[in-house]
Amino acid sequence: MSVLDAAALTCIKRDRTLFEGLSFSVEAGELVYLRGPNGAGKTSLLRILTGLSHPDEGNVFFNQKNITSFPSEYNAQLLYLGHKSGINGALSALDNLSFWMAQHGVKQSPEVLFNVLATIGLVGLEDVPVRFLSAGQQRRVALSRLWLKKAQIWILDEPFTALDVSGIALLENAFNEHISQGGIVITTSHQALSPLAGNHRTFDLEYQW
Amino acid sequence: MVVALYKGIFKRDMSIAFQQKAELIQPLMFLLMVVTLFPLGVSPSPETLQRIGPGVIWIAAILSSLMAMERMFRDDFQDGAMEQYVLSGMPLPAVSVVKVAGHWLVSFVPLLMLSPLLAVFLNLTVDMYIALMLTLLLGTPLLSLIGAIAVGLTVGLQKGGLLLALLLIPVFIPLLIFATSAVDSAALQLPYYPQLAIIAAMLLLAVASAPFAIAYSLKVSQN
Image 1: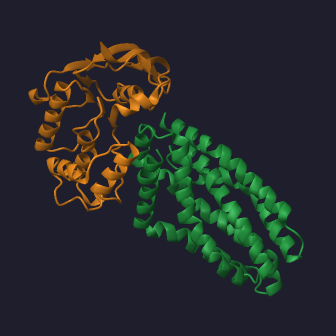
Image 2: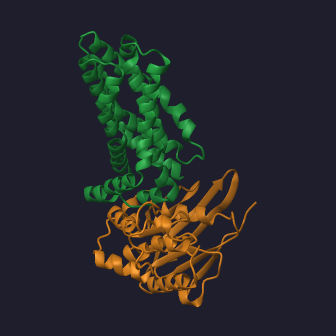
Image 3: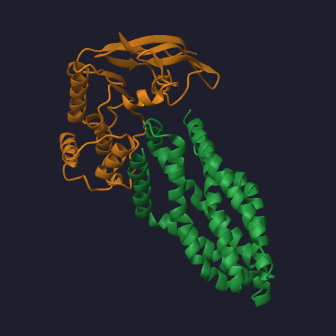
């Protein structure tokens, strides 16, 4: 049975139809790799799937329930990382993540948090204000959330931006592990996913004039 | 949920505010300088200063609050923290209340503490100062609450700063009228409770309805 369903989504931005009547469903354990040229509406589609923006027509269903009517059930199972990382430059990685965990009701011990920061390769940088870190390191701080919140659905917009080779491999391994446990990953990227990420379904979004 | 709001929003806002002390002090310095300009520009005679004093302090407070207002949501919007609030499952009106309260604490409480100094600058009597303090206590939370709606609406725009001032200044006019009228009454030894009651009524209305308006404006800015 499908977990996430998009039904006849239409999105119009500045009088240009990005997509019209778009329907698809995603089942547990699926990795959906969303492709398309710049301006095709990948980010718009992902934001509609998270419920941050509303489609001009159509609905999104999580477990057959409309996400606009039951947002809290959906939000508890959703992890969204957009272009904007949601990391405040004045705070340290540790503070950023612990405040974020408090907001999302994620209860993890400090040891777990330190372990995650070690996995992601930020040992020794926990207390440095994030604005002093490199772009790739800032990206890693944002991505640490994938290891902290137990969410079934990951919606990631260009998660590989600014990551180095080892960072990409780490993330692809995390995708593989997540889908093997019945999770769902929906991601966009301009570079192809490697076999490390596991089986994936490619979904192409055309640029419409 | 209360824990999430306290630990996730309030403590976060406080630690960010204390990392950016310059942003907190600048509006206060601005206020102090504007108030200092009046004796130099209008007249240093004690009677004139006493007459214009309450109005000067209130106008300077409104103008300096406009400078600090944007801080409320600007950074959260630009770095994407706002998206995470919306998706966190915390009710957005409650998040707005906590953010507005945090903003009031860091930008208006220092102003309240500075007000005795301003009162001395402008030769206010003790009665006038007490009335001024009461109007500031009731009026500044109102500035924060109403301001937050406008910040929520303009935060998605590229250069929202001036638009914010144009939106807010007309809305603050009634507050200014009643606040200065209360202090004027105090100067004449007249009762000023009616003016305070009207400001308190405006504040209560804002407390009851502004959180929903702020939450809605933030949602609209996400779309």
